[in-house]
Image 1: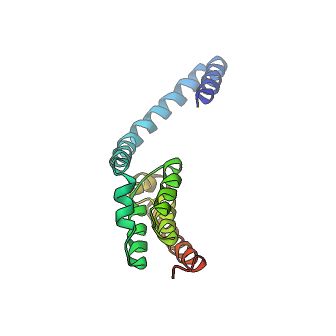
Image 2: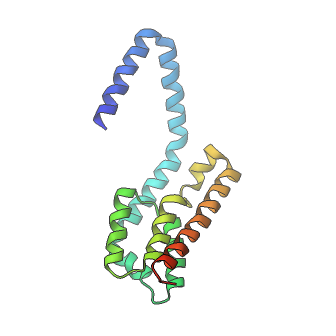
Image 3: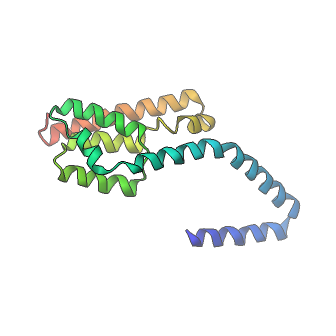
Length: 158
């Protein structure tokens, strides 16, 4: 990450030497866009902090239901409204499997976690528009259901 900062700084200096006015205009445009996106981004960061506060024990308690279809539904719902980076989600999936949560439930949770963004909707609709955002999230949710059911069939959980 530090290397990216260095490359950016070098390119900024080159741009500044090349054309000061365009560089300042570019920085002004970037700052305006940053100020516009910042409130929604801060909301997402707050939600992430709240979600990461919950331990894997609490999540495994809700996902480890006796009824596999109820577990899948809860996994789909939790994953859709949870924001978590992949480097946390995948080890969490391993912990859930170790605690006895069904593969299809873990698949539902992790797939919606990575693909469906209920909490990111306000930010996403600004760039894609509301219709495209709804189509993307709906399609991703449907794909997550199909993946979960396929894994359930594959591992004999259904």
